[in-house]
Image 1: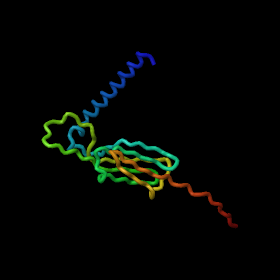
Image 2: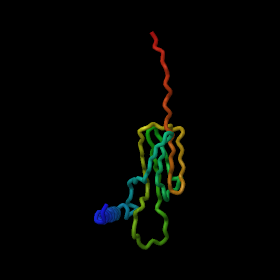
Image 3: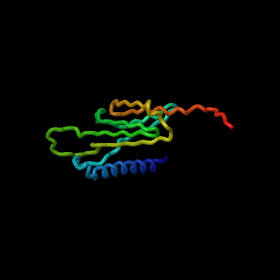
Image 4: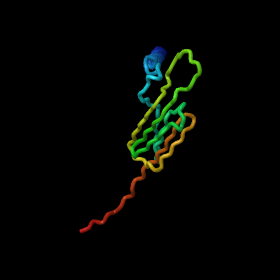
Length: 146
């Protein structure tokens, strides 16, 4: 890539960042916490191995006691609440980008999982959900009756 293309690409990246900030700052619910009544969705990553589906959900600032994980055969739903940190004597707010309030994140998979063996743990602001894949039933020979 030549120098002109690199500079142009850098300018587009900068413009994209600025536009994203501008749109986030224009959102009225972000500026007035008491108005925010809708659900938001935390970021999530999903990985698949031979044995299981792993789901990681960004839960920074959320009390693990406020999380609910509902596993289904072909998906998982995480719900909870992120509370606004209490601050004494706020004089003004300069920036609000972190979502607060109730959230819900549902993810679906192409492979069935064994819901009876699902585990979850929340560490360092990251919820990890391990969902073992459902084992295929062995092949069975069936005798044809007459």
